Amino acid sequence: MKELLIRSVSKYVKLDVEEEDLFINFWTEKTLEKGDYLLRNGEICRADNFIVQGALKAFYINSENGKEEILYFGIDEWWATDIKSFQQQVPSIYNIQAIEKTELLQIGYDSFQKMLEQIPKLERFFRIILENYLGSLQKRIILNNVWDAEQRYFDFMENYPKIADKVPQYLIASYLGISAEFLSRIRKKHKPH
Image (cartoon, rainbow, N blue to C red; front, side, top):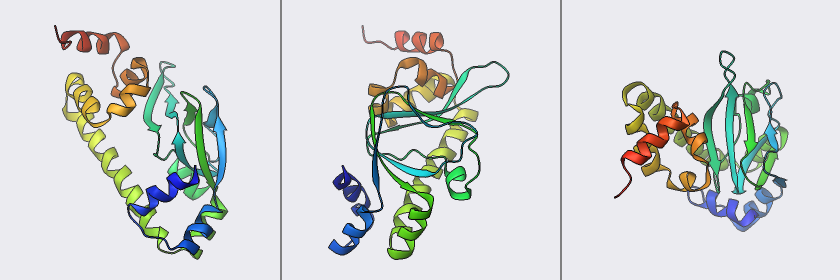
């Protein structure tokens, strides 16, 4: 499991053997069964989480209609954390839950700070991860304001085919801000004959 995390880091930052050994010792393994929560609204996010294998959804409950609204998905070799809650050690405003059995590597807040002190070049890796996340978040905000549901669906399918393979359609509909019925109509309309 930990080799996968090393491989992920090495795409951006080269660690020597001693740094790899030190780095890997900061992480612990955790397994979530389908339906288990990694984080609940109101809890403080105590760990940063690297998904080795599985699928998670981050969501909040809309107080007006009681519906679950998907913020993001996390799949193999992605990260799943409430960044603000983790960095500031304040209560989370959303939930993270396993869609299927999920294997994680976790690092606690204090260990994370110590790791960055001991291996400063990892600051670059985590900055790149945050920049990528911020870029995708900005794109999503713009697309939600400019594109119609059909365009957003095709963009999602083109950019996130692995998520589309793992995640039920009703959750994808929630992520896109449309009803499952409407998503079904879009898919039927564009089905090859």
